[in-house]
Image (cartoon, rainbow, N blue to C red; front, side, top):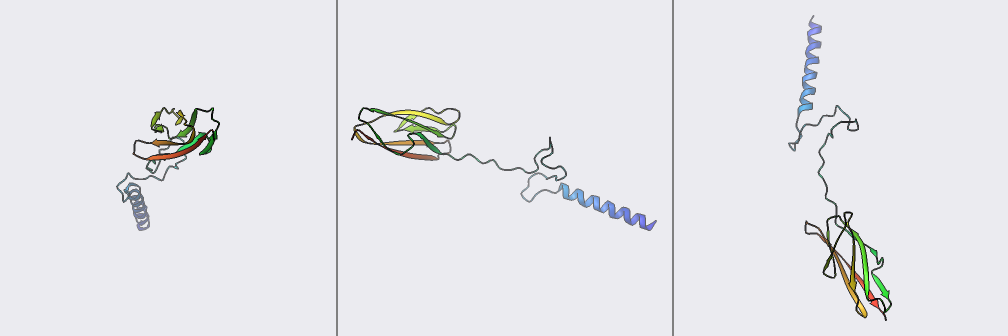
Length: 140
């Protein structure tokens, strides 16, 4: 009988110990983590809260592709197309242009004869800003 009591006590101590581990909170005060259900089990809740990372602001030109462009004298304006972060504000030479839901934009700017420097700026609601400068030579 002593053997059974000892086994029962060991089993009870093991259960209490494992329950304490399962209920223990992380040092950062977050909710307990339950490793009993694998994360890839259908319908299982994630076991660890991961901070969300905000997308990084970017600015890419689709047209013109090059940032140093030569156009004929007959070309009085340049159409600029590009992509940026959805929700960003875009300006071409200080004039705001609309962006679509995917961050695409199109704008037109007038060209002077000779050298033109066109600045394209994208900014987000966090105060971040990305600039690209296009150098266009018209009719030389």
